[in-house]
Length: 467
Image 1 (cartoon, one colour):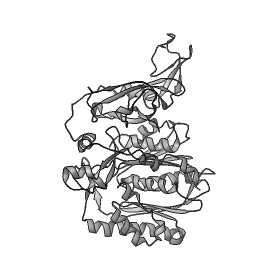
Image 2 (cartoon, rainbow, N blue to C red):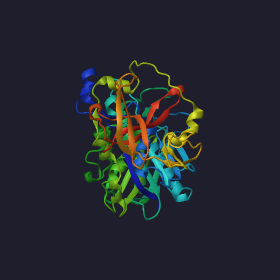
Image 3 (cartoon, rainbow, N blue to C red):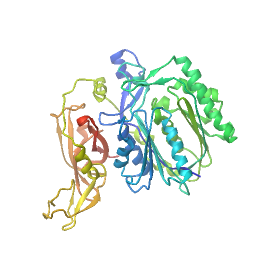
Image 4 (tube, rainbow, N blue to C red):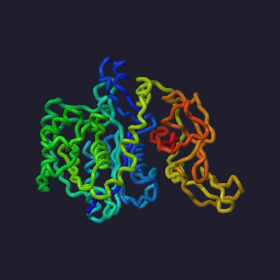
């Protein structure tokens, strides 16, 4: 039986506080705290982080990748292929972008499960990530959430949660929508879409699964449903009629906000990391109908606790200092225009170095060089290289704070890091406190967006303080 073998999650460290919003607009809950993607983060970079947390970096054996989002950076070009390269997945790989609905996360999970059961895939990865758009001063500014979740699927003794059944149905229904090019989500009448959309459809989804499987409400230990806000979540829970103990005591929609297509998978990762063997879990996605998936935790479920999940990210939350930085993060304030040089041919030629961090080892003298050049710096040998993947961890050898380049944070920290296993890496730092940077600081490499030169996205690795 197909099932989940590993999980991972990532929530951006930045927080937009309700008090910060209230100081500008005079409205907004002072208790609110929205997880906010940084200026160098998007669904691809967050998805890479979640996938590496679930699968490790390389040598995962994943042969299919499903990437779900309503905010894919590219409307026409594979987003999953970028994610696959940065996570160092095998090049012999099936990839699929799933989008168009906040239901995309559970739809991708169903598709991956079907591929495992059919034998067309032996190890599948499902990633759901969102950078939710909202307008300054709108209610969505504090109610939405950026983040990503990843689950690996397979068969055999490594399965930590078996997928016992899936129920899907479809009904054309307009509740929330966004047209191409729009910078915010629109919604219909609140009362109508809550009662006839979220509540009615979510109940039909879960009851369809119970009817299909013959399971009773008493058989289910955990029920995870999508909702756009805490009030709607409570209304769905009341209508479903499961025991109170089956619902999260503090659901993610109340703790973090609405993370769209990533929400069901984030809730599932969180639930499985706290589940006990034998527990049955229902996770339901919503969107013009819905999917409900029934899982049973196995004896291996406790192994998921060691993976980086929500807890790891939430421990690192930091409020942004002012509302202006939120505007800068989203390109809503005037900035000095820069036009960096970029080239598709160069990006393709250097893909293994820039995306997979492949360095060169000189066959003559053994020198490790990154980035690899035609001539060895140590012995002068020409075109005598073998590949070796760099480590993503190291210690700062030297650094400088540069205040001249335009940056939403007002400065850029550049550092050279001596990596574990050899080699040095020179790059920008991110998610750091300027005054805390010092020689010998332990860092790890994290995949980030550099710029949008020539109209397409340019990604590379940056340095972040380690745990």
